[in-house]
Image: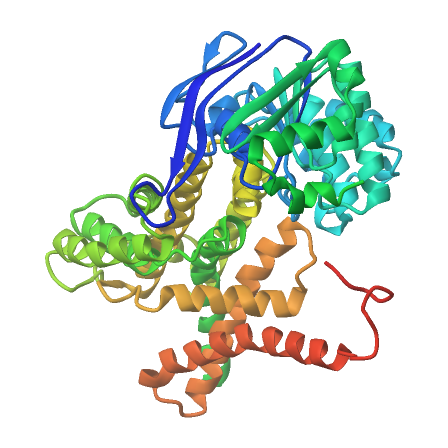
Length: 265
Length: 309
């Protein structure tokens, strides 16, 4: 499904702020893999997702998604294959546009946009049904501006929008980190439901180790721009938080002890 | 009597300049770009139109040519901004400065009178027997009605929605597969097409073109948008917003006519406009700051109140 081979990325090369964010990264996903990604700050988790999405160009290596070489494709073109939810709840929706307009934009992801009407009647019916799944009452407020919604509502909407057109790969970049615990839980269970129901292939970055262990069929740990641990299936199910901490300390030489991952329950 | 005639003239001028304000609205409010091309493209519309009419081209056809030329100017700014990654303001200034020379080249001199030449207004005056200001007003209103209907439709289509999304949240637009660079170029082209049309109509209505006729157009356009927002409010439907821009432009012209009647020197007009816009942009900021400092309370932790965003 996804095949990342020998991808490296250095930010600000040749300057004092030079940062090698990814080092010869390799990752191979099977269809319907639901992978949780953990790692300390600056480990390269978000960078990896951004490289897949095409936010920045990669320095070397190749990325294949569903048999298509997307290594050099511009971001907007890859979007036809990807569903994305960002850490910032404000990032995934257009505040000045209506809920149904936002959904219609997402519904046309990867399709040619022409001079047909931006939101059709038929779509409004589909959106109404889809919004009901969120259980937030948004289906009754479809012409409300998205800017009026709370962060959690916006994030749930973004998640729904990301899966409206079934993506080949769903990228979730700490998408519950900016939400309060109750809302985060709700968005997380929605995520689980959608990924399972539509049998999506997904990459989810999280700082919460329990979530990382509980969700998905595979877990990878990143450190210093590389994948240092990759576990799946039965082996993953047997893992405990302590095992992960131990793994991490071994890899990072103990510096992990004061990382914020420790603080998340 | 003088003031009534002056106001009638102001209304018809306001409507024709309102088309330019519509163009500026598209970039300033929808694309969220301050596009300084307009000073050049407004004059470009007038100059192209005057040169063509002088050469014997039909005045209606020369309006169409002005629109195309304006779109090309917007396209140039768009390419400078997106492909060459020049900041939008600077890209607009570059096109604007370049257009000054181009406009001089087009006309061959700094101004062109259209005294004995046909214009769309003269044609209609002969046809209907109405006076100049009435014809200007009617032609202007017909154009404005058609353009607002066209823009309302266009920004409801898939492409139009994508342009709105690009201005609203560019990263989101890209993540949903929109070519944001292309959308910006398209928006700038449409905007400057409208601006040039306005320049061409103003030229035909006043009977001459001048390379300097676009100076300060951006500020006049912004003044129109802001006046419109003050009157209609910010939370109105898209159609009303477009209408409010034109109404704002008319009111701006009436204000100008009144202060001129009161004895203000025309040379001071641009300063007055600049102060008006600066004040209109400053007042909401000051009000917000005052509201914040009034709401500040050192004794609460904010968690119980309306914190966050």
